[in-house]
Length: 56
Image (cartoon, rainbow, N blue to C red; front, side, top):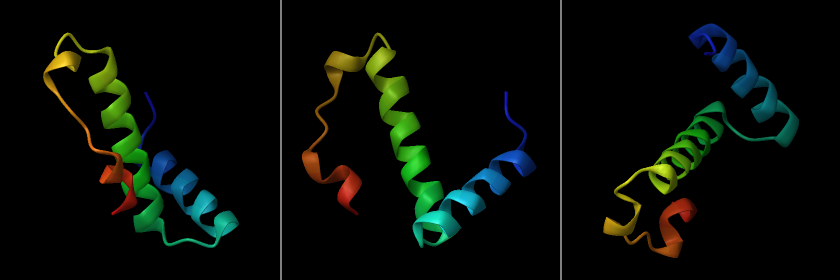
């Protein structure tokens, strides 16, 4: 498991390299991780995710 300070540093580096704010990168990371975990859960067929979820 990755530590919180290490995660913050990686997010900061990605944000700087892509010319984004750290908050935007963090939000994308958590959305992607949530969707990945949901897709592997036994409840995956109980959800319908609209395409605009990651566009906010």
